[in-house]
Image (tube, rainbow, N blue to C red):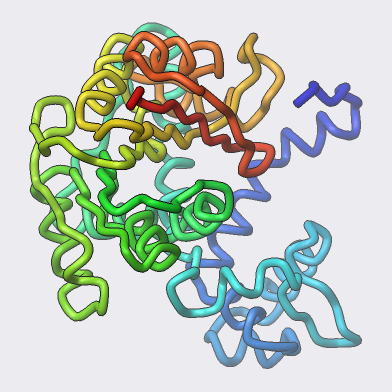
Amino acid sequence: MGVVPITVESMQQQLWSFGIHRIITVAGRTGILRKLALGAISVEDLASTLDLDLRATGKVVRALSALGWARAEGEEYRLADALIPVFTPGPNDLTPFLMHAHHLYESWGENLEPWLRGQPWKSMIRNQNGLEQFGQAMAAMAGIVAAQLVGVLELKGVTRVLDVGGGIGAYARALCRAEPKLSVDVLDTEEVAVIGRAAFAEDPLVNRIRFIGGDYRSTDPGTGYDLVLFANVLHQEDETEAAAMIERGAWALAPNGRVAVLDFAIDDGQRENLVGALFAINMRSFGDTYTEPTITRWLSAAGLVDITRQDLDRTRWLITGKKKG
């Protein structure tokens, strides 16, 4: 997590990151990334198929190659191997998340300096269509993170799960697929719950995933859960509310049940992990990227023991605590 020393070259690259962001998001919005994911294609055929300007397409694709997002095969290009699964149409397609990243870029450009000068960050009010797009974006990223989660989270003996702020069920889906005897209650706003119910209406998992509409700060989902999951949700709250949510989660557990916190990782000084530090800004004044000692303190204060941390990758971790039997 150490800080990489700055050089003039890396400074120039960081200053040009606005262009990198635009290239990637626009390449997703115009269909370039999906086409490159489906196989090698020439710039001419790419531009013709997508009805794009030939010269502009060539420059953008060559820039994607320089970024490592694409690779050249003679006069043709294809997406980098690691990215093909996440830009091929299907449940792991990250294209909706690129749309969300585009909105974030616009929001930071409009609000960062006024916020730094003490003015409120103007939050976007989402209508039903906006909620659906946001849900799709979160589900696209959550599908990838959920696969990492079930790879490290012990699910043996787990039959009842409460997924707090679980959106439209990406984590619930992964958990149910990983453990056939498991069912999940997803607690989120009624607007989100409606979208989730519709998304699972024809899904084979429909009888194992229940959407509870309400406020996760106050709605009582009941007790007796083997696992209460807070996946990328505590960072939306201040320390007082986040600690209270952990306490309510611990109360909802059955004996020997666990609270699991999945969130962005950050070093104790909150100044070395770049993704964690940037995400802290994204949470503005209402939330934060919380350190391991802080999360551990909340779990301990809620009476949980055997607190452990597992790293999903360099940007996310899973911290769990167990209720005494």
